Structure formats: C-alpha cells, structure tokens
Image (cartoon, rainbow, N blue to C red; front, side, top):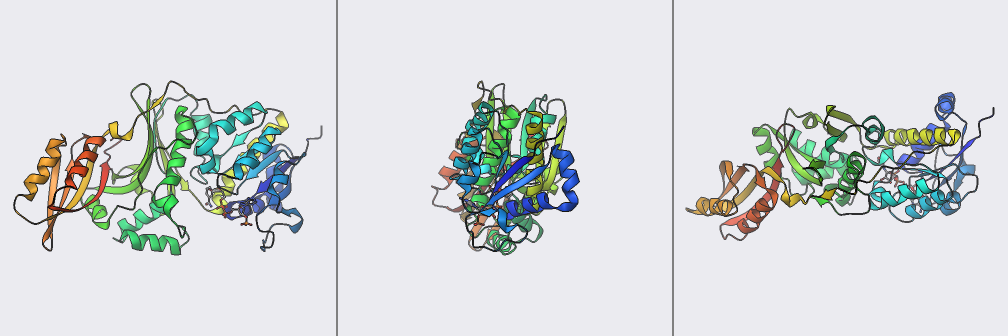
Length: 433
Ligand SMILES: NC(=O)c1ccc[n+]([C@@H]2O[C@H](COP(=O)([O-])OP(=O)(O)OC[C@H]3O[C@@H](n4cnc5c(N)ncnc54)[C@H](OP(=O)(O)O)[C@@H]3O)[C@@H](O)[C@H]2O)c1
C-alpha cells in the first residue's frame, strides 16, 4: 500500500524556522524521518515577511511571502507556525485548522491568549494542534504532562522557564554582578533582546506557566492575567544575603493546587535552598520540576531556547501530527476542569525576605518592627549593616500571608525614616513554601 505524502508548510524562517528547514531537508536523516512519520514528508513552502533577505539552507523555490496563501493551500497536511506574536499568527492557524489541516506552533503568547479556543477548533475539524516548543524550548515537558503523566494527580509544577532571567540571576550569583551589568552581558551574548521587558518583567514566563497549568490541571488558556513579578528589583545585595543564608534566587513559574479545587498560577523571584534540584540550573538552561501524588518529584532539564533545540521539539510535533494523518486519527485536546477556581497570590502564605534602607537613628528599628507587628507579620531573623549615615535592615519573616506582607511594605514606605525598600522575595523551603 502506498502511504500518502504528508505536505508541510512553514510560516517563519527565523531562529527556529530556519533550523527546522535544515532538519527536515537533511539528507542523512531522510530515512529516520520517513520511519518516524510513517510516510514521506514534503516541504511545500516556507513563508517569510521579507522576500529580499538572503537565506542559506532554504531552497529559493520554496520561499514565499504570502503566508495567508500557504495557510489556505488545498493540499496542505501540516502548517508549522513559527512567526510569533498574536496577529496575524492566529489568523493563519485558524485558517488551517478550519480546513482540517494540523498545526504545530512554538508560540507561547498565542497559546496563552487563546489556546482553549484553538484546541477546540482543531478538535472540531479533526485536526491536531501541537505546541511542545512553546514551553522549555527543546525540553519535552508538555508531551510528558499530556501523555506519561495523564493518569497522575499532579500537585505542583514549578519551573525555571525563562533562560534570559536565569542567565542574569546566575551571573549575579556567580560574579556578584549588578542587575544592570548582568543584563548588558546577556544582551551582548544574544540571550536578551534590546527591549528585555518580555523576559525581565516575566510576561514570557507567565504565558508558559499558563500552558503548563492547562496540561497539569485543566485550567483554561484564554488570556487571563496571572500574578506576575519579574527580576528588575532584585539587587546584588539580595543575592549575597541569600548566599549567606544558604539560598539561591531564581525566577520561578509556579502552578499548584490549593486545597481541593483551588489553583494558584504565578511567577516571582524566590529564594530556594541551595540543595534544591532547581538551584543547580545555571545560565540560560531551563528546568521544570513536577510533584505528582504517586510519582513523587520529577525534573526535566535542558535548553529552553535556541534555534536548533527548539526546532527539535517542533520536529517531534510534526512527526506526531504526520503519524496521526497517516493513521487517520487526531489527538483529543486537553480537558478543561470547570470545578477549579483561581486562588489570588495575596491569599497564599510564605516566608519572605525583605531588605530596607533606613536612617541610622534611635527608635527607627522599633517603628519598623511595629509596622510588621501591626500586620501580624512575625520576624524570624533580622540582620543590620551600616551604609554611610543609613542602615540596611534585612528581614526574614515566618510564614505570613502575602497580602499582609504587601500591606507591611506599603506602610513601611510611608515611614519618614525609611529611605528605600528592595525586593520582597518569597523563601521556599524544601518541597514547599
Ligand atoms: N528563538 C527561540 O529560542 C524560541 C524558543 C521557544 C519558542 N520560540 C517561539 O518560536 C517562534 C519563532 O521564534 P524565532 O526566534 O524563530 O523568531 P524570529 O527569529 O523573529 O523569526 C520569525 C520569522 O517569522 C517571519 N514572520 C514574521 N511575521 C511574519 C508574517 N506575518 N508572515 C510571514 N512571515 C513572518 C519572519 O520573517 P523575516 O525573516 O522576513 O523577518 C522570521 O523569518 C516564536 O513564537 C517564539 O516565541 C522561540
């Protein structure tokens, strides 16, 4: 029996798209791809924005500038969207899905914005929608959540899901660099964009947490805002305090169960013990730590970005979609659990680290301690150091409700004796906060 040819179109030939074309056209891998796809793959077009750019490795007869026409081709089996952004990427994907064409994308922003609706559209038209590379680049975490852990009750997913911020924090830890210097170095090395806000303000990580949560717990992907705090307020003195106390500061994306039907999704810097598995994830690496009720702790580690590692994950999705085309089936979308409700970050409790600069005057410590007390936030330890005519007070609190700590910070800022307040960082001990 002759297996039909699987026709693949790609939108985008940037870092990921050009690497994918290379993998698909590599003659030494032809037989392996044929085996994995269970049918011959044919690349029928690569759509880009700028047709005048030189693109080595992409045959000129495949390059086109009309992405909409590629998405609407009658003979397409799989559309790979690697352009990024919300529009027009959404429009191309919807066009393809409505025609029953399977879609593979690495677009975390789009999936977080409207993943539930797109997955439903795919299902309604008998197509697949795969997006493994949208979280953790080359790390196959989504497939693990979708398949291997499908029968497990997951309690928490916690990850370092942004390589840029992990590079900056790692640099601040290993070289005692300031935030600004570490960011400049990340930009010089190509780890950070000229405008780094999507990374350092944690928008990118927040989208990934939403995707992880949808597969781990069944929460929806429909553009909800989740609690998000980036790394711009973390200073080298915070990193140094953490080191002396036996912790490492990481930007963590967390999705976890709270009680029977609550889910908390958030991104924030956190101090984690230096012997926690996530503490040894350095540089631009990513890692996702999953706590299952029966499986216990599990961790995936790898390159969270980069053209080739990311394209490898995309290729895995293409092959999955191809196999499904050949066998005439498609995967069911993740199921939404409508009994779940979102727990605001302010309702959760944690220990906190807080450092403030105050005037070095008698009575200041008592007034500062009074503010903590007035909000029921109990101080576990305090360290004082002199800075010119000021003093720096660094506090570790006992477990306290986040909203109470936020109210404490708000009232401390109103004290005349308080000059500045640094980052307020959650302290995570062992497996839990
Ligand atoms: N880079 C990574 O390490 C990484 C990791 C994980 C996920 N991702 C995701 O993968 C996707 C692609 O990322 P990337 O880094 O490869 O992006 P990129 O280097 O900026 O490349 C984007 C490509 O899309 C093309 N493009 C943009 N808008 C288009 C349009 N309207 N029509 C046709 N082509 C269009 C661009 O064409 P021109 O070349 O003509 O400008 C370019 O070739 C994004 O969703 C990103 O979030 C990337």
